[in-house]
Amino acid sequence: MTKSILDSRPLFELGAEIHVAATAEEIYSTVSDMKRHAEWSTELRDGEWISGEPGKVGSVFRGENFRADDVVSWAPLIRGVWHTKSEVVATEPGRAFRWKIHSKTGEPQELVWSFEIEPQEDGCRLSQTFRMGWASPGIHEITKNMDEDDKRKFIADWTEKMKRDVASTLERIKSIVEKA
Image (tube, rainbow, N blue to C red):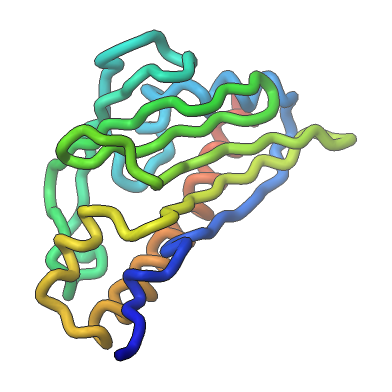
């Protein structure tokens, strides 16, 4: 029996980086404010802190997202408005900010987004990574009626979408931080 793509570990691990002409502190104060993520995210539109304090490990942010019909249009994805809960899992001022997405039932998943900041001579290198260690309940739901070829196609298409999203996010953050 052939191993399913959904058994891959990690299922997703991707990222990108960009140079930003700003201090590590300026970049960190921007990317660690989850409410501001709506300024550059391809899907997040708004949100609120539902527990804890902004920028504190363990705090949870409820995001309101919107996904257009043309995003991996052939797959049975959530379209229109949908919500996420994100738990802050690491805060290293001037260096790193990470959050983990919760499942629909509220459990933290092995799905982590990160911003890493590395000071350089004329600014900083800002990188963003997305890692899903194992297929989330959402991925299983999306692919439950797919054969293995379609599952592999979905993972490939979703990886390409995520790569574009991360690159776009970094360009937007660069623009926002450098204009400030």
